[in-house]
Image 1 (cartoon, rainbow, N blue to C red):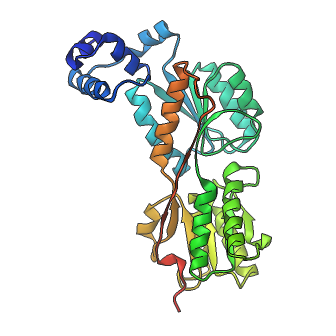
Image 2: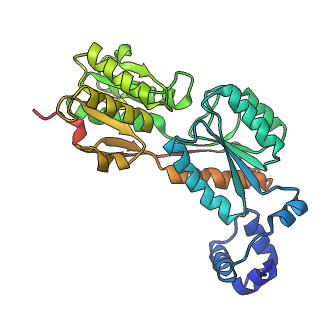
Image 3: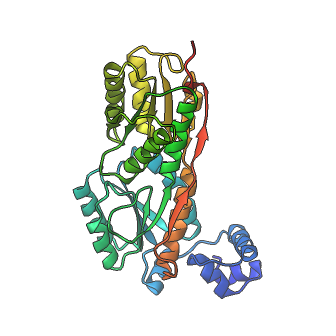
Length: 334
């Protein structure tokens, strides 16, 4: 069985450099490449139990998300798993079922399992239980959402700009009455995406009709379907709808089909998150695309840095750019 010494010899680096790499520290890019090549060539496996006993670590990370069925969350986990695998960490994924009380219980569960750190997508903007776990010494990184009154590392997207740009494109295509279907009122991303919606209206000197701002459940596409039907029936002047996450976008599409409307003819649609929507819906849906894998990778790297004891730039908030994918769903054909 290959050892760290074997990896060091084959990669022409020192044992100390290999050890630093395995424990998540930053090393020279040239050394990283040679070490990874040596690990692959030697089929080197980290003895997680021995390493944990030596370093007082379990080499396990807790991941807490609102729903295991949420495609956005699981796509992010794919990105972070690559980083954790490379650094010898296993992950323990928990589902809070979008409930703060359950979220608190799952954080306690992860604490009892002695995980070395936690990445969490919070249910809402309250964070006393998260702060308490931080005070217990647990490294924590937030993903996708910030919470109130807490200094914490985080990886988020620029929700305001993404929303603003989407609504701006709808306005440029002639829409003046635009509905927005977003998440619950006490969620960071809901507030941020409404800010972008409002900013686009104000810049174009359009009145914001608050009755066209609909709060639904980010994890339940059925609430998106009902919201779409409500908007269409109560606002006949509304020509476009912006759904602000994947589940709500699917719900909006289902609502449109139920009402026998045609996207791009009877109503314009802008969605969120999944590029796959472009390929399965006709006409294709315009979307705000978030860099889901990159969110996961950056969250994992940031947590590894904190678990190594490096708090030099705490708290760090990485804010990532979104991308617009534009299709014929924006304009209404006459």
